Image (cartoon, rainbow, N blue to C red; front, side):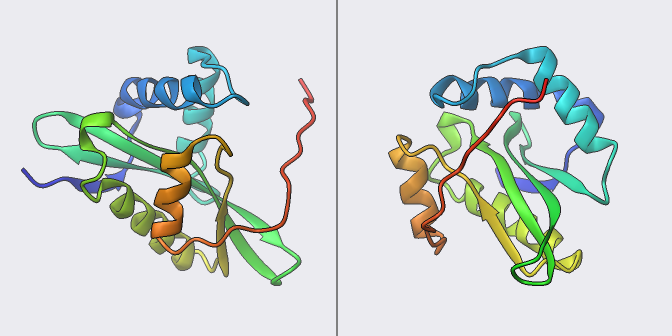
Amino acid sequence: MPITTDYAQSSDINALVGLLNALFSIEQDFTPNEAAQRRGLELLLASPDRGQIFVARHPAEGVVGMVSAQLVISTAIGAPSAWIEDMVVREPFRGQGVGKLLLEHAHSWAFSKGAGRIQLLADADNAPALAFYRHQDWQPTRLFAWKKGLL
């Protein structure tokens, strides 16, 4: 059965929370928090001009993957840039082109919004993800990610 991609809907939130739980369970910098993930997803869905969530749907299995894209202004390129986050595909559907479809959908959306670049962060210990991005022609940078909590 073919897998399709489209925009996430509020009815997808429970499935998306499950996907984020799986993703955040393997990343050292994040801890699954269903309430926080639900709030974040609701905020993204309420701001479609600033960001979008894209889902991969299987006719029998429902949502099997997701990725989000959010716009920022880049002074380096003098144009919007899109941050790609929350890239995750359910285990049984990996290696079948689902992630590629999701990234293509996010790329098209970013381009339609005038973005001159897309970028993402990947867990340094997630070898399958790093290999996937390299295979999709993403280029590593020499930048380090830093964070500081505000809440």
